[in-house]
Length: 118
Image (cartoon, rainbow, N blue to C red; front, side):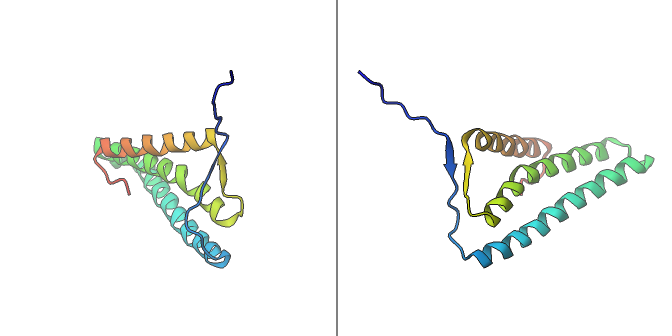
């Protein structure tokens, strides 16, 4: 007697079915927001590290929020941009679970610090 088991190897990401030209435009649009988020948070971290007057507890927590925000954006945007540009819209199961875990861990961390998630 055989057992009824299914092994999931990949997840298909459907999203919105858009024109390829619109997907390229959206990928550029989201890439600019991603770059701005990374540069803004890197600038905050750099200023806090360089100025000794900013070595206070408030700026310590601000630098932690900047690091979490960079991690939060980096757990979502690269795969989203790749899916907008490429025609293959699948992701294997293990990286999908890892991305979901990182997204939720960063969201919970931001909520614990008292900031906004998005």
